[in-house]
Amino acid sequence: MVVERRVLHIDMDAFFASVEVVLNPALKGKPVIVGGDSQTRGVVCTASYEARKFGVHSAMPIAKARRLCPHGIFLRGNFQDYMEASEKIFSILSSVSPCVEPTSVDEGYVDVSGSQRLFGGDDAIGAYVKERVHEETGLPCTVAIAPNKLVSKIAVGEAKPDGYLCIKNGEEASFLKPLPVGRIPGVGPRTCDALESFGILTIGTIADMALDDLLNIFGQTGYVLHQSALGISTSPVKPRGLPKSISRETTFERDLLDWNRIECYLAYLAEKALCALRQNDMETRRVTLKVRYSDFETCTFAQTFAEPTCVDSDINNALKQLLPKAKNRRSRVRLVGVTLSWLTYNQHQLNFLRESAEKWGRALNSVDDIRTRYGFESLRFAKAMELGRKPRFATPSLSR
Ligand code: TTP
Ligand code: MG
Image 1 (cartoon, rainbow, N blue to C red):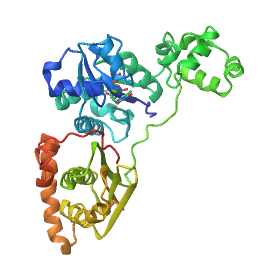
Image 2 (image 1 turned 180 degrees about the vertical axis):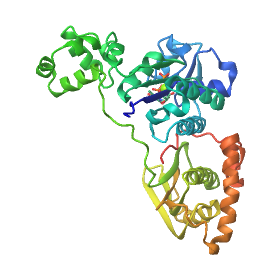
Image 3 (image 1 turned 45 degrees about the vertical axis):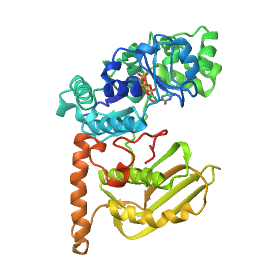
Image 4 (image 1 turned 90 degrees about the vertical axis):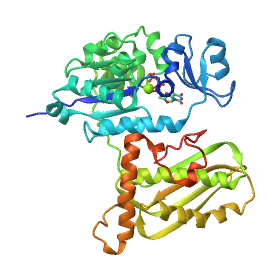
């Protein structure tokens, strides 16, 4: 039996702004704008759909957004909150199929070809994903399921916000036919203008053209346009491979000289990196401390372990030994980070010599379980708690 390829695409709606609404329900229905590094500087990261009605959009200067939407609610945002929501979303997607390809913090593809019987078809899969995301994060998202990544991506764009769309195999071209050419991913304003100058406005017009004509006008791009217009794409969903290293780093809002505070941030970042390490069922043999000073010089200090570990105290002890080297330079610090590398699978269950590490490992697994259920902030180590219950980060610490 030939299994039909079915690809799910998910994209969260007004992601950062929606997370802010969940954190403060009084913002619901209001024009919320996230971004900027002050009241007037920087650019918009995203705007709620209410704010978009005023013409506010991502990458627009905050000052312009203020002019367009003076009564908008402007927030700086906290990347930690967005990352936590993102992690929950991808863990839900992994419960549908092992073949998950994250493409950004709020977007990804899932190959659901093999999940059809288990869930009872596309619509059941779509409903399950939307419901679980809503239950676990309170956030709205848009989901589409189609024969390939290209069509599911375009379908999500059509179904936004809070939508669901299913395009059956064989319906690709008819779904795409009436849409403007700019909906094809990669067709930017310049290609749109070029197509329009030939009177080509809809995807259907491209599909109906002779391939030779398209090749004459656009060269090789003509072929890609023709395939896309017919909804043909063979690009596979590429599940994220195992990480080679796991890093967490942040740039401070203002360069810091207070090493006690810097160490608190470092402790928090190390906690986050270790939690991610254990979630991947892995251990590390090398920890690297990264420090960027205010003159942008970046130094790294590393320590290698004789035995692999996933235990916080091992990493914290190593960092303690590395810190004096970093403090030697008496300049302000712009960024700190921690990287765990030389990763291996956690496979020392039967090693009796490591009994104490085992006990730690079990305790930490319980810690991680509680965090999965009640959020990362529910259990924290003392050092990082000096930053307060919920530390603010000016920049994300997204790297793996
Ligand atoms: P998007 O998915 O492009 O946008 P969105 O989720 O806010 O809105 P929608 O998908 O409903 O159109 O980006 C996801 C997040 O990434 C967004 O909430 C904020 C962040 N982002 C930026 O910080 N800068 C940008 O220029 C863009 C486009 C997004
Ligand atoms: Mg989005």
